[in-house]
Image 1 (cartoon, rainbow, N blue to C red):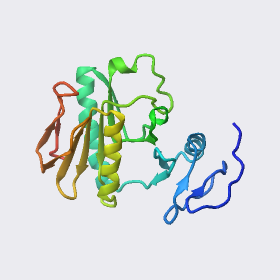
Image 2: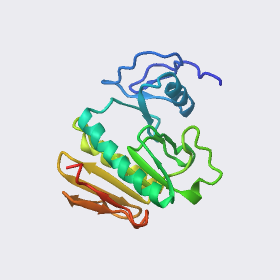
Image 3: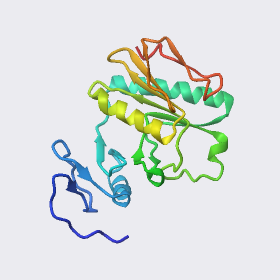
Image 4: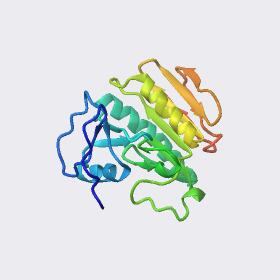
Amino acid sequence: MTVAPAAPATAATELIALEPWPLDVSNVKLKVSSEHFDRLCIQNPDLRLELTKDGELIVMPPTGGESGKRNGNLFGEVWYWNRQTDLGEAFDSSTGYDFVAIGGGKMSPDVSWIEKSRLVGVRIVGFIPIVPDFVIELRSATDSLKPLQEKMEEYQRLGVRLGLLINPKNKQAEVYRVGQSALVLDAPNSIDCSEVMPGFVLSMDRIW
């Protein structure tokens, strides 16, 4: 891989170093290429990183115990349904997706699912290079709502058939479908996802 030459400092700092180092991104936007992002992920395996379609690096801190428990319950619901039906594959929050070829970034939903036939011949050892059919994003106690809504809109733009933004703080769920405005549900007991995942109804009992 050829390392790009150093560029003058700008308001959005261009990140080109390839050696591991402590990242402090609290007051600066860091921009990286897709290739540099891949190297960062390899060299910093303990960090959860994402890359926006504009090349901005997003560093996400570990969640607290309450969010981790909720996310485990959400993934468990999807995993158990999929084990029973064998209709596809379920993926947890450590899974990355590569949308660069279709004008997106590299993102990691908290929960995702892909229908089985779409995975035929697809290599999933690294970042998965196809758009999932279904995603869940869970708002943690420290997350701002607007960036998560923008992330859901990006999933929608890329073609995710059904996306759920779970917001325990407000006891709301936002439902995103391709070509439709987001639907806000107030403290639902469950969410019917059968339009994409036949027979799957996501229980919210352990979330609120």
